[in-house]
Amino acid sequence: MPANITLPVSRRKMLKLTGAASSSALFTGAMSSIAAPAFAQSANSIVVAIPYDPPSLDPLAIEQSVPAQVTWNIYEPLLWRDKDGGIIPWLAQSLEQTSPTTAVLKLRDGVKFHNGEAFNADAAAFSINRILDPETKSQWIGTINTIKGARAVGDLSVEVETHEPDPVLQSRLTVIAMMAPNWTSEVGNQVGVQTNGTGPYQLEDWKRNLSIDLRANPSYWGAAPSIESLTFRVIPEDATRFQSLRTNEIDLYLGVLPDQIGEAPKFEAGLSQNYSFLRLSNLEGSSIQDPRIRQAMNYAIDKDGLRNALHGGLGNNLNAQLSVPEMTGYNPNIEPYPYDPDRALDLIREAGAHGLDVTIEGPKGRYTGDAVEMQAIGAMLESVGLHIDLVLRDPNSWVRIGDRNQTPTPPEAWYVRHTNTTFDADRTLSSYYSLRGSYSSFSNAEIDSVLDASRKEMDPGKRLELLNRAYEIGAYEDPMGVYLFQHTEIWGMRKQVEFTPYADGILHVGEIRMTG
Image (cartoon, rainbow, N blue to C red; front, side):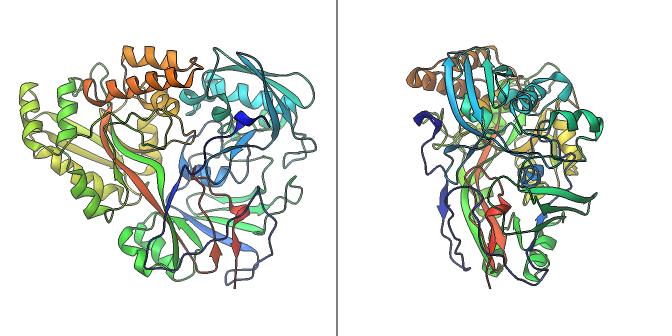
Protein backbone atom coordinates (compact mmCIF):
# COMPACT_ATOMS: atom_id res chain seq x y z
CA MET A 1 0.00 0.00 0.00
CA PRO A 2 1.42 3.46 -0.80
CA ALA A 3 2.75 5.49 2.08
CA ASN A 4 -0.09 7.99 1.83
CA ILE A 5 -2.62 5.34 2.81
CA THR A 6 -2.01 5.97 6.52
CA LEU A 7 -3.09 8.62 9.00
CA PRO A 8 -1.23 9.83 12.08
CA VAL A 9 -1.59 7.49 15.03
CA SER A 10 -2.80 8.24 18.55
CA ARG A 11 -6.11 9.68 17.42
CA ARG A 12 -7.74 8.35 20.57
CA LYS A 13 -6.67 9.41 24.04
CA MET A 14 -7.22 6.43 26.30
CA LEU A 15 -7.91 7.29 29.93
CA LYS A 16 -6.80 5.03 32.74
CA LEU A 17 -9.43 5.62 35.40
CA THR A 18 -9.36 4.21 38.91
CA GLY A 19 -12.01 2.18 40.69
CA ALA A 20 -12.15 -0.97 38.56
CA ALA A 21 -9.74 -3.47 37.10
CA SER A 22 -8.98 -2.69 33.48
CA SER A 23 -6.52 -4.68 31.46
CA SER A 24 -6.98 -5.44 27.80
CA ALA A 25 -4.76 -7.31 25.38
CA LEU A 26 -3.59 -5.33 22.37
CA PHE A 27 -3.69 -7.16 19.06
CA THR A 28 -1.69 -6.44 15.94
CA GLY A 29 -3.11 -6.93 12.49
CA ALA A 30 -6.73 -7.74 11.79
CA MET A 31 -8.98 -10.44 13.16
CA SER A 32 -6.29 -12.08 15.27
CA SER A 33 -6.56 -15.81 15.85
CA ILE A 34 -6.83 -16.55 19.57
CA ALA A 35 -7.74 -19.39 21.89
CA ALA A 36 -11.38 -20.28 22.42
CA PRO A 37 -12.77 -19.24 25.82
CA ALA A 38 -15.12 -21.03 28.20
CA PHE A 39 -17.47 -19.01 30.37
CA ALA A 40 -20.84 -18.94 32.05
CA GLN A 41 -23.29 -18.29 29.20
CA SER A 42 -22.04 -20.95 26.78
CA ALA A 43 -18.73 -21.93 25.26
CA ASN A 44 -17.38 -19.50 22.65
CA SER A 45 -20.30 -17.07 22.91
CA ILE A 46 -20.71 -13.46 23.99
CA VAL A 47 -23.67 -11.17 24.69
CA VAL A 48 -23.44 -7.45 23.91
CA ALA A 49 -26.19 -5.08 25.07
CA ILE A 50 -27.45 -2.33 22.76
CA PRO A 51 -29.96 0.39 23.72
CA TYR A 52 -32.42 -0.08 20.84
CA ASP A 53 -33.28 -2.30 17.92
CA PRO A 54 -31.65 -1.13 14.66
CA PRO A 55 -34.17 0.25 12.14
CA SER A 56 -32.29 -1.57 9.38
CA LEU A 57 -29.15 -3.64 8.79
CA ASP A 58 -28.54 -2.15 5.34
CA PRO A 59 -25.03 -0.68 5.84
CA LEU A 60 -25.19 1.53 2.75
CA ALA A 61 -28.42 3.20 3.83
CA ILE A 62 -28.03 3.57 7.61
CA GLU A 63 -25.46 5.78 9.29
CA GLN A 64 -25.94 5.19 13.02
CA SER A 65 -23.53 3.91 15.64
CA VAL A 66 -25.80 1.26 17.20
CA PRO A 67 -26.64 -0.56 13.93
CA ALA A 68 -22.93 -0.22 13.08
CA GLN A 69 -22.01 -2.34 16.12
CA VAL A 70 -23.88 -5.13 14.36
CA THR A 71 -23.24 -4.50 10.67
CA TRP A 72 -19.47 -3.99 10.81
CA ASN A 73 -19.15 -7.55 12.08
CA ILE A 74 -21.09 -8.75 9.01
CA TYR A 75 -19.92 -6.40 6.27
CA GLU A 76 -16.48 -4.99 5.41
CA PRO A 77 -15.14 -2.00 3.42
CA LEU A 78 -12.32 -1.75 0.89
CA LEU A 79 -10.08 0.16 3.31
CA TRP A 80 -10.40 0.17 7.08
CA ARG A 81 -8.77 1.61 10.18
CA ASP A 82 -6.45 0.20 12.79
CA LYS A 83 -6.95 0.75 16.53
CA ASP A 84 -5.34 4.18 16.42
CA GLY A 85 -7.27 5.42 13.38
CA GLY A 86 -4.68 4.80 10.68
CA ILE A 87 -6.05 3.70 7.29
CA ILE A 88 -5.09 0.13 6.37
CA PRO A 89 -5.75 -2.23 3.41
CA TRP A 90 -8.70 -4.55 3.83
CA LEU A 91 -10.78 -5.97 0.97
CA ALA A 92 -8.59 -3.79 -1.24
CA GLN A 93 -4.88 -4.57 -0.99
CA SER A 94 -3.57 -1.45 -2.72
CA LEU A 95 -4.68 1.89 -4.10
CA GLU A 96 -3.06 3.81 -6.95
CA GLN A 97 -4.06 7.37 -7.87
CA THR A 98 -3.99 7.10 -11.66
CA SER A 99 -5.16 10.66 -12.35
CA PRO A 100 -6.24 13.62 -10.23
CA THR A 101 -9.80 12.29 -10.27
CA THR A 102 -9.39 8.51 -10.57
CA ALA A 103 -7.97 5.82 -8.31
CA VAL A 104 -7.63 2.10 -9.00
CA LEU A 105 -7.88 -0.38 -6.15
CA LYS A 106 -6.55 -3.92 -6.42
CA LEU A 107 -8.84 -6.30 -4.55
CA ARG A 108 -8.14 -9.28 -2.34
CA ASP A 109 -8.53 -12.58 -4.21
CA GLY A 110 -10.60 -15.51 -2.98
CA VAL A 111 -13.08 -13.58 -0.84
CA LYS A 112 -16.71 -14.70 -0.91
CA PHE A 113 -19.93 -13.36 0.51
CA HIS A 114 -21.80 -15.49 3.05
CA ASN A 115 -24.04 -16.97 0.34
CA GLY A 116 -21.03 -18.03 -1.76
CA GLU A 117 -21.24 -15.16 -4.26
CA ALA A 118 -17.76 -14.00 -5.24
CA PHE A 119 -16.44 -10.66 -4.06
CA ASN A 120 -14.83 -8.99 -7.07
CA ALA A 121 -14.58 -5.68 -8.90
CA ASP A 122 -18.20 -5.88 -10.03
CA ALA A 123 -19.31 -6.16 -6.39
CA ALA A 124 -17.07 -3.28 -5.32
CA ALA A 125 -18.33 -1.03 -8.11
CA PHE A 126 -21.93 -2.02 -7.40
CA SER A 127 -21.58 -1.14 -3.70
CA ILE A 128 -20.07 2.29 -4.37
CA ASN A 129 -22.66 3.10 -7.01
CA ARG A 130 -25.49 1.89 -4.79
CA ILE A 131 -24.58 4.18 -1.88
CA LEU A 132 -24.56 7.09 -4.36
CA ASP A 133 -27.91 6.13 -5.91
CA PRO A 134 -30.65 8.54 -4.77
CA GLU A 135 -33.00 5.55 -4.52
CA THR A 136 -30.90 4.21 -1.64
CA LYS A 137 -31.58 7.42 0.34
CA SER A 138 -28.30 6.86 2.11
CA GLN A 139 -27.65 8.74 5.32
CA TRP A 140 -23.97 8.63 4.28
CA ILE A 141 -24.52 10.76 1.19
CA GLY A 142 -23.09 14.01 2.56
CA THR A 143 -19.86 12.19 3.45
CA ILE A 144 -19.28 10.32 0.18
CA ASN A 145 -20.84 12.43 -2.57
CA THR A 146 -17.50 13.73 -3.83
CA ILE A 147 -17.35 10.31 -5.51
CA LYS A 148 -18.85 10.27 -9.01
CA GLY A 149 -18.99 6.49 -9.44
CA ALA A 150 -17.04 3.29 -9.85
CA ARG A 151 -16.48 0.64 -12.53
CA ALA A 152 -14.71 -2.68 -12.82
CA VAL A 153 -11.52 -2.52 -14.89
CA GLY A 154 -10.61 -6.15 -14.36
CA ASP A 155 -11.92 -9.01 -12.24
CA LEU A 156 -10.03 -7.74 -9.20
CA SER A 157 -9.49 -4.08 -10.13
CA VAL A 158 -12.02 -1.33 -9.53
CA GLU A 159 -11.69 2.28 -10.65
CA VAL A 160 -13.21 4.99 -8.47
CA GLU A 161 -13.87 8.39 -10.07
CA THR A 162 -14.37 11.61 -8.15
CA HIS A 163 -15.98 14.83 -9.38
CA GLU A 164 -12.85 16.80 -8.49
CA PRO A 165 -9.46 15.88 -7.02
CA ASP A 166 -10.38 14.55 -3.58
CA PRO A 167 -7.88 14.88 -0.71
CA VAL A 168 -9.83 12.51 1.57
CA LEU A 169 -10.99 9.80 -0.85
CA GLN A 170 -9.28 7.08 1.16
CA SER A 171 -11.18 8.10 4.31
CA ARG A 172 -14.49 8.00 2.43
CA LEU A 173 -13.79 4.46 1.25
CA THR A 174 -13.48 3.26 4.87
CA VAL A 175 -17.24 3.79 5.44
CA ILE A 176 -18.60 2.07 2.28
CA ALA A 177 -19.55 -1.55 3.01
CA MET A 178 -19.25 -4.11 0.25
CA MET A 179 -22.46 -5.88 -0.81
CA ALA A 180 -23.22 -8.74 -3.21
CA PRO A 181 -24.92 -7.48 -6.42
CA ASN A 182 -26.95 -10.59 -7.28
CA TRP A 183 -28.12 -11.18 -3.72
CA THR A 184 -29.07 -7.53 -3.21
CA SER A 185 -31.17 -7.64 -6.37
CA GLU A 186 -32.82 -10.90 -5.35
CA VAL A 187 -33.86 -9.85 -1.83
CA GLY A 188 -35.11 -6.43 -2.95
CA ASN A 189 -36.76 -4.50 -0.12
CA GLN A 190 -35.67 -7.17 2.39
CA VAL A 191 -32.07 -5.92 2.18
CA GLY A 192 -32.43 -4.23 5.56
CA VAL A 193 -33.65 -7.33 7.42
CA GLN A 194 -31.48 -9.96 5.73
CA THR A 195 -27.69 -9.75 5.48
CA ASN A 196 -24.94 -11.09 3.24
CA GLY A 197 -21.48 -9.70 3.82
CA THR A 198 -17.88 -10.87 3.60
CA GLY A 199 -17.21 -10.41 7.32
CA PRO A 200 -16.36 -12.79 10.16
CA TYR A 201 -19.99 -13.13 11.31
CA GLN A 202 -23.26 -13.87 9.58
CA LEU A 203 -26.83 -13.26 10.69
CA GLU A 204 -28.54 -16.27 12.25
CA ASP A 205 -31.71 -14.81 13.80
CA TRP A 206 -33.28 -11.43 14.47
CA LYS A 207 -36.06 -11.21 17.02
CA ARG A 208 -37.27 -7.65 16.59
CA ASN A 209 -36.86 -5.46 19.67
CA LEU A 210 -35.31 -8.38 21.57
CA SER A 211 -32.08 -9.71 20.11
CA ILE A 212 -29.89 -10.24 17.06
CA ASP A 213 -27.94 -13.49 16.87
CA LEU A 214 -24.79 -13.85 14.76
CA ARG A 215 -22.63 -16.88 14.17
CA ALA A 216 -19.02 -17.06 12.99
CA ASN A 217 -18.63 -17.32 9.22
CA PRO A 218 -17.01 -20.76 8.63
CA SER A 219 -15.65 -19.61 5.25
CA TYR A 220 -14.22 -16.30 6.40
CA TRP A 221 -11.21 -15.24 4.32
CA GLY A 222 -9.27 -14.03 7.38
CA ALA A 223 -8.29 -15.60 10.67
CA ALA A 224 -11.23 -17.26 12.40
CA PRO A 225 -12.60 -15.19 15.30
CA SER A 226 -12.36 -16.73 18.76
CA ILE A 227 -16.00 -15.93 19.57
CA GLU A 228 -18.19 -18.39 17.66
CA SER A 229 -21.62 -16.98 18.49
CA LEU A 230 -22.64 -13.45 19.28
CA THR A 231 -25.92 -12.02 20.58
CA PHE A 232 -26.83 -8.35 20.59
CA ARG A 233 -29.51 -8.00 23.25
CA VAL A 234 -31.78 -4.95 23.20
CA ILE A 235 -31.90 -3.37 26.68
CA PRO A 236 -33.24 0.20 26.53
CA GLU A 237 -32.68 1.36 30.12
CA ASP A 238 -29.27 2.45 31.44
CA ALA A 239 -29.85 0.92 34.89
CA THR A 240 -31.07 -2.39 33.48
CA ARG A 241 -28.04 -2.73 31.21
CA PHE A 242 -25.70 -2.11 34.14
CA GLN A 243 -27.51 -4.57 36.40
CA SER A 244 -27.41 -7.18 33.60
CA LEU A 245 -23.65 -6.73 33.43
CA ARG A 246 -23.24 -7.15 37.18
CA THR A 247 -25.33 -10.33 37.17
CA ASN A 248 -23.39 -11.83 34.21
CA GLU A 249 -26.42 -11.78 31.88
CA ILE A 250 -24.42 -9.75 29.38
CA ASP A 251 -20.68 -9.52 28.76
CA LEU A 252 -20.13 -6.08 27.30
CA TYR A 253 -21.82 -2.78 26.46
CA LEU A 254 -21.07 0.84 25.67
CA GLY A 255 -22.55 3.49 27.93
CA VAL A 256 -21.63 2.90 31.56
CA LEU A 257 -22.44 6.04 33.56
CA PRO A 258 -19.55 7.75 35.36
CA ASP A 259 -21.10 7.12 38.80
CA GLN A 260 -21.34 3.40 37.96
CA ILE A 261 -17.63 2.93 37.30
CA GLY A 262 -16.78 1.96 40.87
CA GLU A 263 -19.26 -0.92 40.75
CA ALA A 264 -18.42 -2.14 37.23
CA PRO A 265 -16.67 -5.51 37.13
CA LYS A 266 -14.26 -4.01 34.59
CA PHE A 267 -14.24 -1.13 32.12
CA GLU A 268 -12.35 0.64 29.37
CA ALA A 269 -12.76 4.40 28.99
CA GLY A 270 -11.50 6.73 26.32
CA LEU A 271 -12.00 10.29 25.11
CA SER A 272 -13.92 9.59 21.91
CA GLN A 273 -14.66 11.29 18.60
CA ASN A 274 -18.25 11.64 19.75
CA TYR A 275 -19.66 15.15 20.11
CA SER A 276 -23.01 16.21 21.52
CA PHE A 277 -24.86 19.31 20.33
CA LEU A 278 -28.26 20.75 19.60
CA ARG A 279 -28.58 20.89 15.83
CA LEU A 280 -30.31 24.21 15.07
CA SER A 281 -32.25 25.10 11.93
CA ASN A 282 -31.69 28.37 10.10
CA LEU A 283 -33.98 27.32 7.26
CA GLU A 284 -37.02 29.29 6.14
CA GLY A 285 -39.89 28.80 8.59
CA SER A 286 -37.63 28.07 11.56
CA SER A 287 -38.52 30.17 14.62
CA ILE A 288 -34.80 30.49 15.43
CA GLN A 289 -33.65 31.65 11.99
CA ASP A 290 -32.29 34.87 13.55
CA PRO A 291 -28.63 34.14 14.45
CA ARG A 292 -28.96 36.19 17.64
CA ILE A 293 -31.37 33.61 19.03
CA ARG A 294 -28.97 30.81 18.24
CA GLN A 295 -26.08 32.74 19.79
CA ALA A 296 -28.20 33.30 22.91
CA MET A 297 -28.92 29.56 23.16
CA ASN A 298 -25.17 28.93 23.33
CA TYR A 299 -24.58 31.60 26.00
CA ALA A 300 -27.42 30.13 28.08
CA ILE A 301 -25.80 26.72 28.66
CA ASP A 302 -23.61 26.11 31.71
CA LYS A 303 -21.48 23.40 30.14
CA ASP A 304 -19.11 23.01 33.08
CA GLY A 305 -22.06 22.54 35.42
CA LEU A 306 -23.73 20.03 33.10
CA ARG A 307 -20.56 18.04 32.52
CA ASN A 308 -19.75 17.85 36.21
CA ALA A 309 -23.30 16.96 37.26
CA LEU A 310 -24.20 14.52 34.49
CA HIS A 311 -20.92 13.19 33.12
CA GLY A 312 -18.77 13.00 36.23
CA GLY A 313 -16.56 15.80 34.90
CA LEU A 314 -15.35 13.50 32.10
CA GLY A 315 -14.97 14.67 28.52
CA ASN A 316 -14.31 18.19 27.22
CA ASN A 317 -16.39 21.23 26.34
CA LEU A 318 -16.59 21.96 22.62
CA ASN A 319 -15.05 25.24 21.44
CA ALA A 320 -18.01 26.55 19.39
CA GLN A 321 -17.33 24.03 16.64
CA LEU A 322 -18.20 20.42 16.06
CA SER A 323 -14.57 19.38 16.15
CA VAL A 324 -11.63 18.75 18.48
CA PRO A 325 -7.85 19.12 18.15
CA GLU A 326 -7.38 15.52 16.93
CA MET A 327 -9.50 16.23 13.85
CA THR A 328 -8.12 17.54 10.57
CA GLY A 329 -9.69 20.97 10.10
CA TYR A 330 -10.08 21.91 13.77
CA ASN A 331 -9.85 25.68 14.24
CA PRO A 332 -7.75 26.48 17.35
CA ASN A 333 -8.63 30.17 17.17
CA ILE A 334 -12.35 29.75 17.87
CA GLU A 335 -13.21 30.69 21.43
CA PRO A 336 -15.85 28.72 23.34
CA TYR A 337 -19.14 30.37 24.25
CA PRO A 338 -18.85 31.38 27.91
CA TYR A 339 -21.76 30.76 30.23
CA ASP A 340 -23.39 34.20 30.22
CA PRO A 341 -27.16 34.08 30.84
CA ASP A 342 -27.35 37.90 30.99
CA ARG A 343 -25.86 38.16 27.50
CA ALA A 344 -28.26 35.45 26.34
CA LEU A 345 -31.25 37.35 27.73
CA ASP A 346 -30.09 40.59 26.05
CA LEU A 347 -29.78 38.85 22.67
CA ILE A 348 -33.20 37.24 23.04
CA ARG A 349 -34.72 40.66 23.73
CA GLU A 350 -32.82 42.30 20.84
CA ALA A 351 -34.25 39.68 18.51
CA GLY A 352 -37.76 40.26 19.86
CA ALA A 353 -37.86 36.61 20.87
CA HIS A 354 -38.70 36.77 24.58
CA GLY A 355 -41.33 34.09 25.25
CA LEU A 356 -40.64 32.46 21.86
CA ASP A 357 -41.85 28.85 21.58
CA VAL A 358 -38.97 26.56 20.59
CA THR A 359 -39.39 22.80 20.18
CA ILE A 360 -36.46 20.50 20.90
CA GLU A 361 -36.72 16.96 19.55
CA GLY A 362 -34.54 14.40 21.26
CA PRO A 363 -34.17 10.68 21.96
CA LYS A 364 -34.89 8.81 25.16
CA GLY A 365 -32.61 5.83 25.47
CA ARG A 366 -30.44 6.43 22.42
CA TYR A 367 -27.48 7.82 24.36
CA THR A 368 -26.38 7.35 27.94
CA GLY A 369 -28.23 9.92 30.08
CA ASP A 370 -29.72 11.68 27.05
CA ALA A 371 -33.15 12.55 28.50
CA VAL A 372 -31.71 13.98 31.72
CA GLU A 373 -29.23 16.11 29.78
CA MET A 374 -31.95 17.50 27.52
CA GLN A 375 -34.20 18.33 30.44
CA ALA A 376 -31.37 20.31 32.04
CA ILE A 377 -30.66 22.13 28.76
CA GLY A 378 -34.35 22.94 28.37
CA ALA A 379 -34.44 24.46 31.87
CA MET A 380 -31.42 26.66 31.10
CA LEU A 381 -33.00 27.91 27.88
CA GLU A 382 -36.25 28.64 29.71
CA SER A 383 -34.30 30.76 32.22
CA VAL A 384 -33.24 33.22 29.48
CA GLY A 385 -36.73 33.83 28.17
CA LEU A 386 -37.46 31.05 25.69
CA HIS A 387 -40.42 28.71 26.07
CA ILE A 388 -39.13 25.19 25.45
CA ASP A 389 -41.30 22.29 24.32
CA LEU A 390 -39.13 19.23 24.86
CA VAL A 391 -40.28 16.18 22.87
CA LEU A 392 -38.59 12.88 23.77
CA ARG A 393 -38.97 10.06 21.25
CA ASP A 394 -37.92 6.46 20.98
CA PRO A 395 -34.59 6.24 19.09
CA ASN A 396 -35.99 5.09 15.74
CA SER A 397 -38.72 7.77 15.68
CA TRP A 398 -36.11 10.36 16.65
CA VAL A 399 -33.90 9.38 13.71
CA ARG A 400 -36.79 9.67 11.26
CA ILE A 401 -37.57 13.17 12.54
CA GLY A 402 -33.96 14.29 12.03
CA ASP A 403 -33.32 12.70 8.62
CA ARG A 404 -34.51 14.90 5.73
CA ASN A 405 -34.84 11.80 3.56
CA GLN A 406 -37.66 10.74 5.89
CA THR A 407 -38.87 14.09 7.30
CA PRO A 408 -38.34 16.83 4.67
CA THR A 409 -39.13 19.66 7.11
CA PRO A 410 -36.63 19.19 9.95
CA PRO A 411 -37.25 20.26 13.56
CA GLU A 412 -35.83 23.62 14.59
CA ALA A 413 -33.74 22.03 17.36
CA TRP A 414 -32.64 18.38 17.43
CA TYR A 415 -30.36 16.82 20.05
CA VAL A 416 -27.72 14.52 18.59
CA ARG A 417 -24.25 13.13 19.18
CA HIS A 418 -22.03 13.03 16.12
CA THR A 419 -19.15 10.59 15.61
CA ASN A 420 -16.57 11.57 13.01
CA THR A 421 -15.46 8.24 11.60
CA THR A 422 -13.27 9.84 8.91
CA PHE A 423 -11.23 11.99 11.33
CA ASP A 424 -11.63 14.87 8.88
CA ALA A 425 -13.75 18.05 9.06
CA ASP A 426 -15.24 17.31 5.64
CA ARG A 427 -17.51 14.67 7.12
CA THR A 428 -18.80 16.96 9.86
CA LEU A 429 -19.20 20.04 7.65
CA SER A 430 -20.95 18.13 4.86
CA SER A 431 -23.19 16.31 7.34
CA TYR A 432 -24.36 19.24 9.50
CA TYR A 433 -23.14 22.59 8.18
CA SER A 434 -24.50 22.05 4.68
CA LEU A 435 -27.70 20.68 3.18
CA ARG A 436 -25.55 18.15 1.33
CA GLY A 437 -26.10 15.93 4.38
CA SER A 438 -29.47 14.34 5.04
CA TYR A 439 -29.02 15.06 8.77
CA SER A 440 -28.54 18.80 8.22
CA SER A 441 -31.04 21.58 8.88
CA PHE A 442 -28.61 24.39 8.14
CA SER A 443 -27.72 26.35 5.02
CA ASN A 444 -25.06 29.01 4.56
CA ALA A 445 -23.87 29.99 1.08
CA GLU A 446 -20.37 30.97 2.19
CA ILE A 447 -19.84 27.70 4.06
CA ASP A 448 -21.03 25.78 0.98
CA SER A 449 -18.55 27.72 -1.18
CA VAL A 450 -15.68 27.14 1.23
CA LEU A 451 -16.57 23.45 1.58
CA ASP A 452 -16.66 23.02 -2.20
CA ALA A 453 -13.22 24.61 -2.50
CA SER A 454 -11.80 22.44 0.31
CA ARG A 455 -13.03 19.26 -1.36
CA LYS A 456 -10.71 19.74 -4.33
CA GLU A 457 -7.81 21.54 -2.62
CA MET A 458 -4.87 19.14 -2.54
CA ASP A 459 -2.51 21.51 -0.72
CA PRO A 460 -2.90 20.59 3.00
CA GLY A 461 -2.15 24.09 4.26
CA LYS A 462 -4.60 25.82 1.95
CA ARG A 463 -7.22 23.17 2.64
CA LEU A 464 -6.81 23.66 6.39
CA GLU A 465 -7.43 27.40 5.98
CA LEU A 466 -10.68 26.68 4.14
CA LEU A 467 -11.90 24.20 6.75
CA ASN A 468 -10.98 26.63 9.51
CA ARG A 469 -13.02 29.35 7.81
CA ALA A 470 -16.08 27.11 7.55
CA TYR A 471 -15.98 26.38 11.28
CA GLU A 472 -15.47 30.09 12.01
CA ILE A 473 -18.66 31.06 10.16
CA GLY A 474 -20.67 28.36 11.93
CA ALA A 475 -19.42 29.35 15.37
CA TYR A 476 -20.59 32.93 16.02
CA GLU A 477 -21.58 34.55 12.71
CA ASP A 478 -24.27 32.00 11.90
CA PRO A 479 -24.29 29.33 14.63
CA MET A 480 -25.06 25.85 13.34
CA GLY A 481 -25.80 24.45 16.79
CA VAL A 482 -25.52 24.67 20.53
CA TYR A 483 -22.08 23.17 21.03
CA LEU A 484 -21.84 20.91 24.09
CA PHE A 485 -19.29 18.16 24.74
CA GLN A 486 -16.70 15.77 23.43
CA HIS A 487 -17.63 12.65 25.37
CA THR A 488 -15.67 10.04 27.22
CA GLU A 489 -17.03 6.65 26.18
CA ILE A 490 -17.09 3.97 28.88
CA TRP A 491 -17.35 0.31 27.94
CA GLY A 492 -18.42 -1.94 30.80
CA MET A 493 -17.50 -5.61 30.67
CA ARG A 494 -17.21 -8.78 32.67
CA LYS A 495 -13.79 -9.48 34.19
CA GLN A 496 -13.21 -12.28 31.71
CA VAL A 497 -13.52 -9.97 28.69
CA GLU A 498 -10.34 -8.66 27.08
CA PHE A 499 -11.23 -5.84 24.72
CA THR A 500 -9.61 -2.63 23.51
CA PRO A 501 -11.91 -0.03 21.91
CA TYR A 502 -10.99 1.25 18.47
CA ALA A 503 -10.42 4.95 17.81
CA ASP A 504 -13.29 5.05 15.30
CA GLY A 505 -15.70 3.39 17.75
CA ILE A 506 -16.26 0.25 15.68
CA LEU A 507 -16.81 -2.91 17.71
CA HIS A 508 -14.65 -5.70 16.26
CA VAL A 509 -16.02 -8.71 18.10
CA GLY A 510 -13.54 -10.95 16.29
CA GLU A 511 -10.75 -9.40 18.35
CA ILE A 512 -12.38 -9.96 21.72
CA ARG A 513 -11.15 -12.83 23.82
CA MET A 514 -12.31 -14.35 27.07
CA THR A 515 -10.05 -15.48 29.89
CA GLY A 516 -10.64 -17.60 32.95
